[in-house]
Length: 266
Image (cartoon, rainbow, N blue to C red; front, side, top):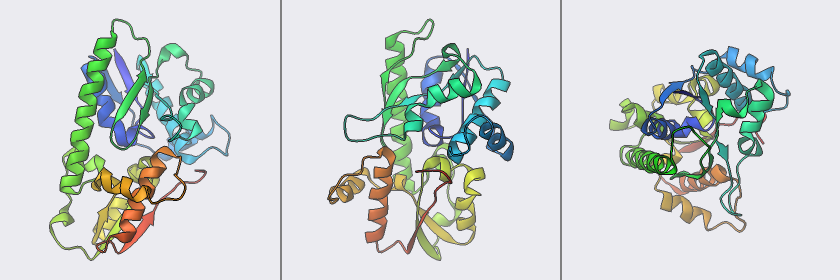
């Protein structure tokens, strides 16, 4: 069975998690193509203009996978964690958005209900899948989380972004003194999609800047910064970015902070 993963939004951080998860289940994984202008135009025609740029591109990735004739497309439903953290409503309703804009039915989507933070992904409800048992799902989840935790550990130890760690890359400038050290903040689908970010990481690196992102910071440091807030932030991943930003502000080794965002977000 071939299952497609749209390589944007949730997959911008957790692509390797879902690849591992699906491979353990014995599925053939197909990744959508790189983001491009055609995807924006395709996705933009399916939803109202006021929807954010990342969602338009996401729907373009869905159409790309439909054209590749996969059996299923992974579209998880991102749910809040208790009464503390909340996802963007569009991520919570992602399966419905896909179904009502593309015409795909439930049988064409693989939509587990999940919650996650920067450290782990927890599947709250597995979708029905022919010939797969709950034990197989649980085993796949355990192995995928172990893989993800090892990826984050490598990011902290070697000062890498998640895509760099997954690709086995090393930053050329990480072994020499940079002209300036910057804290780079933004959602994964903004920073790590070269089309959306216009290659911001590579451009800053070529200018001699050293970069730090949230995944390079120990999670305890991030949580310690967040405990100082008078009122907790309720957006799930926004909490991590805020904690990382507060850490950068107090880090004497950081010369400045860049926050990248997209049109229509928020």
